[in-house]
Length: 118
Image 1 (cartoon, rainbow, N blue to C red):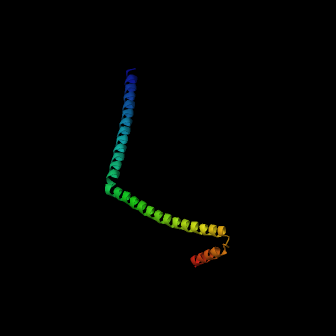
Image 2: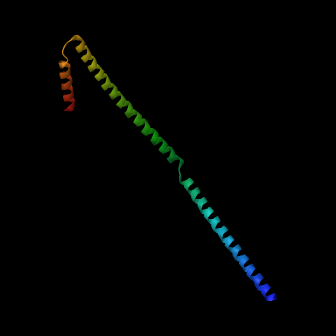
Image 3: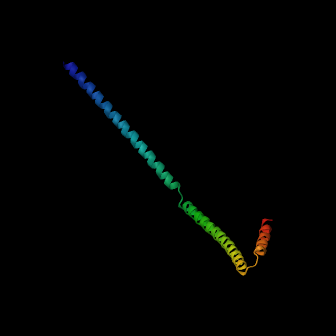
């Protein structure tokens, strides 16, 4: 009986130490993974140069300025076309109101469009 108790307690102790070893190994592995992830994050933050970020912001600002300048030019062109079209409409309305034929205005407009197409 004494032998059985001794073997039983030895087996339980052996089993308990194996579980402790597994837990210690698991804690060490998790700790190493945390240290590795922390160092990777620190390296990434240090590689980002604040000047590069500012340059990117300036590039975007310059691109926006260029784009707004282009939009202003396009708006001016569109406004000129609108004014030309309104002038032509006024001429047609005046011609119709006076009773004259609108074919002269139409011919002149046709010649202008043909010249632009060339």
